[in-house]
Image (cartoon, rainbow, N blue to C red; front, side):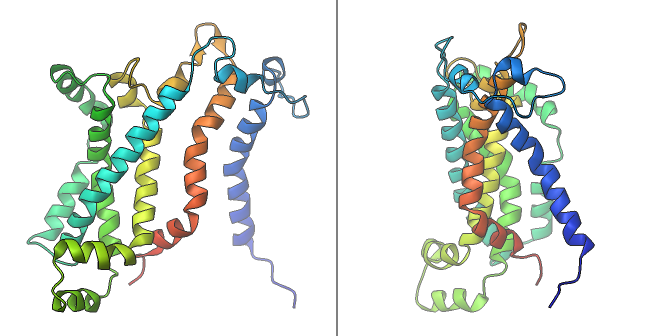
Length: 273
């Protein structure tokens, strides 16, 4: 049986290709030499080279990218774990065990995301300076946790609202306390939602640049900050820049592909009741 042509399907494929094409072009450019990458129009069939990756790993400068990458992993993973530890009990209270004026509490969480990031930059910088926490990765962990917590609570609330109340009532009849209920009943059922929330928080933390650029220096600089260092007064080296951007993007891409089933399943929870 011949399938009917669906214009929406073709539009979806076209949109997907348009989104992926710049990424593929970035990866291809990273395997070119600087002279081939700088040609106008770009040379699609130029010879391949690892020069950009060698420069990224400090072949000529001796500057290692590993400390910034490790800092990004520490800040992103640490803040994501803290967000989940705080967001799951809060979402549980707002969905399964509602508190008084739940809508007001949720609106308060939402208002914290309405403030422009730049508006809070100077107060946060002064707090870090007076506390002696400038260029400290622990301060970034706390900062990223506070930034991602509101959206995590909103996401987890919609996920936990889908858990059957009968399961919680059965756990209560068996004498399970709050911690036991969260660990043995709520968490296993809400794994897709937890995975989706964790991945989103990880991506937001990994890609954050403004606060990391202002609040860090030599010790706690993250991968995005290290990436901006390739734009110098001497010019923009496209091959090296694309190689650096490709490597910095790999952790997010790997995490997304590894958790794509859980991510789709988690984001679909709570969409339709």
